[in-house]
Image (cartoon, rainbow, N blue to C red; front, side, top):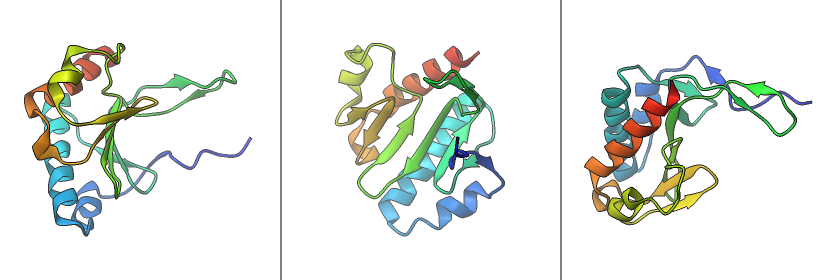
Length: 134
């Protein structure tokens, strides 16, 4: 089996965020990193070259192998800010309705503009996911 490309690595999260060339995406990323730092009480670290993760949450793949992963995280992609680990177990959650414009994928929440979503609801989603971590 090939090694995973997305693993925790040494890297300066602040430097990574500062290097985001799109001003709005950089500002949104800074705000979500600050929100996740406040909610989790932990410092972020880089996962791969473009994911910022908080905490540790091992998971087991379909082949039964346990892998390291983060509890909550984000990645500033060109089309949207991708948040990992924050989706409620029930995709029809009232929190997702209250959040505002977004889309979802397999365990991911996609937000095009942070200004368009309800930040207290986003904080609640992050808090709930973090508390479920332990």
